[in-house]
Image 1 (cartoon, rainbow, N blue to C red):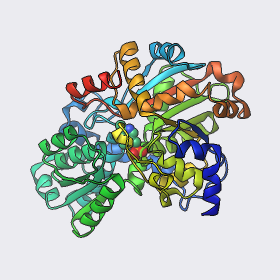
Image 2 (cartoon, rainbow, N blue to C red):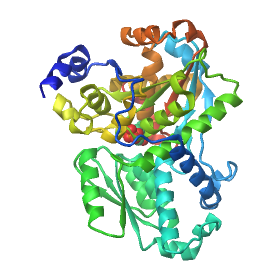
Image 3 (cartoon, rainbow, N blue to C red):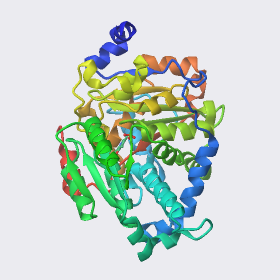
Image 4 (cartoon, rainbow, N blue to C red):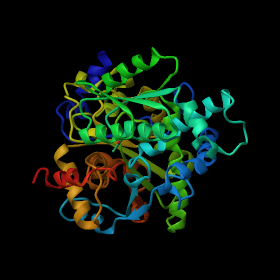
Length: 439
Ligand SMILES: *Cc1c(COP(=O)(O)O)cnc(C)c1O
């Protein structure tokens, strides 16, 4: 642990331990991956093909996806008004254009978890249906919406540990197919998310503990039942690949909007990070697509910077925020995670540009600014991502990154994307409370 103490006594380590906002630049970016089993483009292609096979079923189960042909995708919208707000009141120096990737509006689950969570449920359903002879390869998948399939899936259960949104995506999709679903919820989970899950027929187990403990208990509960499948947010390759499919679709949206990403047009992407699966999978996919022309940054709350601690020390899942004297508590409930996914952290070593930390009070400033400038509401966790464009041109560390990556002259042609990870299902009274918080 000597090395770890040395790392933590450096300036970033001190800022982290004192819960001060900071930014860490990843020194391993661009080096060969040390991950045990590096994933490849063909893994993402396989996930995309699976989502296409399931599209007719999704369309039938969720009529809101009719127009998109059963694909769950979100718009990419320009944020010119918010960019002016960032540069005005919020002190940013941001060259280039700013966009919002609105996974906050994704169909079915209303958060980025509609990518990973739903993908994993579908993959599991497919495995069961094929191995038990319910579905022959090549048969149309909308058969799985029928009564026979529901009776079949009712014999199996799916369990998951969640701070809220992952539970919603697994619960809504799982119960729609007929699975029995149990969601193990950490103390941070919002009551409305539990209520919504129960209305969908999922069982909700509530814990007084944090997320890592809810996952541990959920895993143990699921393991005791051979017909139960556990969605393991800390280790799941399926979740990761489901998130990664966002990349190809984003690339198409950028092309449609005439936005270039190449040697002369860098792309910056800012994504809120909890355990790491969602931002990690997206970063992985984008890196396969855009190589060195994409620069992905995560954002974490100052009291729960678990991925930053894991990557900074190299300890990954072997360190938690409490080890650094932090509480893990934050108003960004989706990011209230004390221990990172080691699987994701190792995948991120060669790819991630860096990680910003953000104070809770700032989340609500961003939330109000976005509402006032663009008329858009996203949940507090999502707002963490605005720390990226707010600080990129201001922090010495990121200015140095831009300089040393040879990007300085290219910044006027840069594109910045803030990844909005949740919001659509948040009830009106909760939104109102968020808009008033900290005033
Ligand atoms: C889950 C979630 C995240 C982060 O995803 P992880 O996979 O936990 O890193 C960010 N924002 C919101 C709103 C989420 O629900």
